[in-house]
Length: 322
Image (cartoon, rainbow, N blue to C red; front, side, top):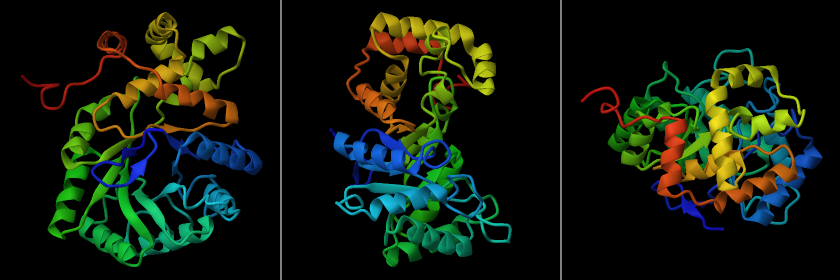
């Protein structure tokens, strides 16, 4: 495994990040344990979760699963760079969500307890909080870092100007600032190229793309439907919107002799500032298959053909100005 630095930090992570959102709702605890163990066997050390995952308000289902896995010992915690997120509501009372200093303190302590660890490697804001100033956000994060409860801070779903504001606010405090941005980015959703990726590149943030396969649309959906495998209604609706592109893409992947899912991940790994796409396997077979993406090499001609199928954006303002 060739590890990479997370943004400008010295923290080394695997070039694929294990997403755990399925743990609990779709993947049993036993199977989740097996997937995490297998991830370590494959060399993956970067795991991502969130306090709201499991989708039972206030329960932190997925974090609890990870905590019970850590508690088995065997170096599981020590080998893992764990990233979790806060913002979503964990209760019905005020201050049980978003990014106030009060919620940051409470949410961090609750995540530590659920995951049965005394520190979080990368603590991420799951969304921008438009009602909390960055001065308050950074002061709260500085306290957590001084207490040894977190090591690095990241963001998720921030706009480019949010990243700029966050970094400039941190710089005024002589604080390290954000090391990573978790952004919606894939071949079908390339708006991050306008402002987010350039901001991350300029400020030294590693980009962690979520939904790299566009909820399965880039994972060979037409092949699967041809084999009479079913697809969720929302996938079918999205497929109807993009059928021409998906058909052309899967045909091109056939020419390359590669699985569409692996090409989509390999393409992301070729993008500026991208550190590690988040993969969310529900089974061991899906996890093992994802590793092929690290071996796929896309030359200039292949990248150009992909851009023809899925046109991207030039860095703003060139995208919409001379």
